[in-house]
Image (cartoon, rainbow, N blue to C red; front, side, top):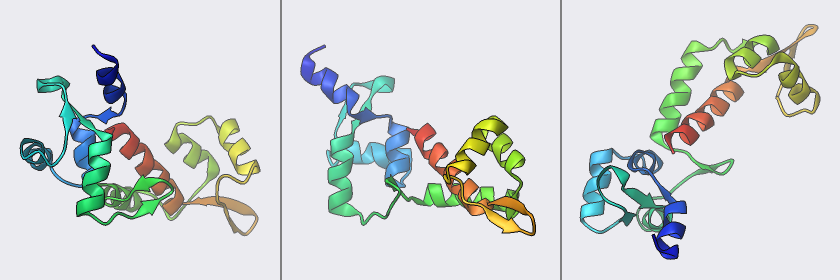
Length: 145
């Protein structure tokens, strides 16, 4: 594999991740690839979409919203909304840690450093569901890539 192909492969994502990023179906993305509106490398199941091609397409065809460095898509918003329906409005820190798969001590350190928003109710502190849902939504997007 040539150096050019290696560098392109490092800057490419799967068909699924590209479709999620553009908030379109994989079938629609494949049509855009056939029409030459988006570029990819490889063939068959090893085909990957060039990130530079996605960025160019977005700039030309779509207004994007940025939220903490990620593209906010319908898929992301839908995922966050589904999570919000399952979470209580406020979670105890130990419950939030379990939900995120973190040891309670590590989560407590994040709270101490002020990296976790907390809402005081009486003498107790709780983690807002919106914050948890957004964090899980970001993980969902990263997994899609």
